[in-house]
Picture 1 (cartoon, rainbow, N blue to C red):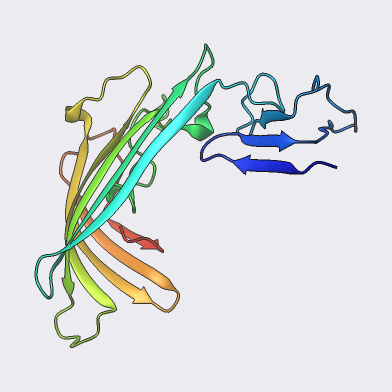
Picture 2 (picture 1 turned 135 degrees about the vertical axis):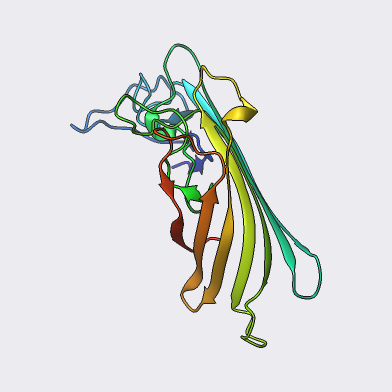
Length: 217
């Protein structure tokens, strides 16, 4: 029997190649018309399940950069960009939308709260995401040579945008604050105290004190 190869695409379908049989929940085999290569839907939004119909796609970019300013001060930069689009007349499914706000994003705002909202104020997410962070890190005064504890001062910026909205810089949300990082035996821990700089009353949800585990930002 020929080998079967399964390729897992980043933010995409499962790609099968080789000799295989696909059955439904009742055990009935799908007619593959002799095909030895196809793509299976992972998002659940295909109109031809279990096969991928290519109705949408996503691409993203994330990069972190650390630059030593001196023996004790380090500049840390982070960029997180995302773009999703529909193909055809079907919208991008909600679980493929981008969200921003909170630890690892724009601190000082409630997690996943930025961007388009419904009538009740719940975040809907968006198809475009822009997030940037800059932080100057340095040792905690008085801890001697212990490098597991670090203080930082930061500026965050970001927003998510709906498919029919332009990428307006005026809609970006900004915050600044201080953060305490600990490289614990269980992984990185960070406590941040942030002040939003241009939050909109009645729209944005502010959360100044935030905690995160396992992330540099």
